[in-house]
Length: 560
Length: 67
Picture 1 (cartoon, each protein chain N blue to C red):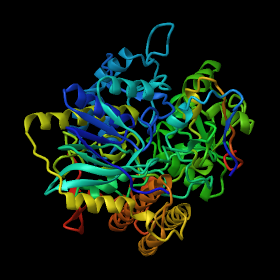
Picture 2: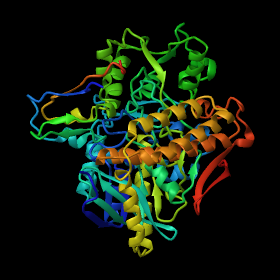
Picture 3: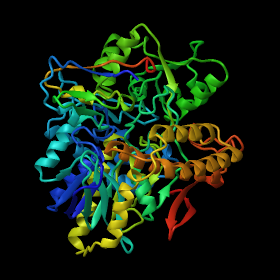
């Protein structure tokens, strides 16, 4: 029988929750400052997170000469892309000032950043309305295991297969976390004067077009526990209403869009028209949101199916796409093509609008609010990567992770912070972690999640209205009542039950934000049929937080 | 759902790396030490299980819902 067994208490200077690319870089950075560091993940860190099986694009400013390849030009582009809802000062501190050094570091540890082996040079492409070629096409298949090994060899203590359920607070400060080992049932108590959250975005909250909830664009194991824990600890969450969609191959969880449009691929409808040009003057070179937006209307108005079309590309370009990009980003991409009987040199690749996700992509404005030091609005609590608002594709997450690790370490080195655990509080949090094992096990976790996907897609998905969002809120409340019969019998399901509860909490915040924001912005991300225009009065961020148990919402002006 | 992670147990050396690497905690070892996909419906089809496999004995076969 799975039950709470041994108690493991671990003390450290900095605790990082989430062993993906951001968390691993945060751990390494804090360790390099000479501190004791623990990196905890529900999986095995070696291949955890969105970059588990590889990545093909690394966004960087290299200052190689042209005007666009400068921090100034990058920041100006990023501000346009995020419509001023992300603080450029943060992006400068955590990304543009660090990224060149990060590329050098990755080359030094053996990551192949220069895939033009003949000239020993970078191959760079541009997409998403960039002023120049910011995306280094690189071989990231071994990136995660190599960086994880670096962290471990530097002395980072990796704690694997431990799911964190709650943060521990001492008055206003976060001083640790509580969790359990998903395989053996040991409970874990971490004591740390600084905690960094890095568990990524949320990718399993909406109905998946293939009908398989884990067949998601980004890692389906990203369930938003960082955002949920931060909210419960009192931190500000920002712009939760913006849910992101992208274009993926029909029924397949691969992020091919960047590779396809970066190489000059087209997006066409059943009539063969390059329809994105109707919705944005830059067509396939426009911001990401314009492509699902245009596809939505093409399908709605009866011009589907829609396709990626790369047949016009040169042999050399297709070769690059099929060798260095698509299967490097998604290891199983060519298996998909082969098993589907597709030859991209001759055939169109049918596409779909993917499931809604709380975003973790370049230009997203949604997640935990952080300042220039990656500090949340709660003392002792930092955040980095896909869960935080700054810059969060792979390169962004790694750069921000490093910045967060350094900032947290600097605070601990500067201020001596006494931490004392309140045993009564710990007992309470431990009981909460294992509580689903005691519940009546009458509702399967997958059905509970299925209902969540249904509610979110039908009422809080694409095309929102006041009445629909209010209905969504009511349905979410009803679903919340069912948690009393949502039980677990083993550690794996216990983890999934906690994940589902976190997603439910975030679903409610998305719905409340969407109801409050009476305008439309960023295409499908927040399209209110009853307020279809972007309203300059709503050119603000919406912050949600929990103060003394009361949900708060406030508007925060866009950055100048 | 049918199992998308086909492991050739004739080739497998039971090193446990696929179980270790799976980001979703989906692969377990049976009593004889052979790896198997315990939760096929939770697979991301990412290929992390096969990438570092020293025996190259894992194949990903997509279910009909994906194709």
